[in-house]
Image (cartoon, rainbow, N blue to C red):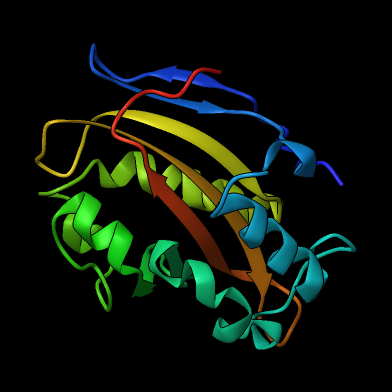
Length: 173
């Protein structure tokens, strides 16, 4: 199943930041961690509709646990980082676990991240992105991420499970 992103977009944010979103098929996700992430999401029911958070078992993702993050969409439109894996912490230079996205505005472009996260829960649709730029008060960075929505008990997209690979360079698209 293809991961559809109805908003394939190239956004220029100043001279030194860009996000490229695009659809991607499972055969292209041969490398860890994205292949394992995609397969785990499909096993949770993500290929048939909206996977539920209650079906998320960290053990199913254990080989890539350092690349994972789990966010919760709050009623005020903010996002809470429930868990942030060690690979992500190392790449961004701090641990955002337990923090709201709005609290991190002095370290990151919270508005851009919020917009991307909001797309995932609003559209209840996965998103794959290649991102490069000066972020998190660090030098030039590049990373890839896949974000998938997870439903709460009522069936509403309220959580995002993400997989992040900091590449250190801008991947070829």
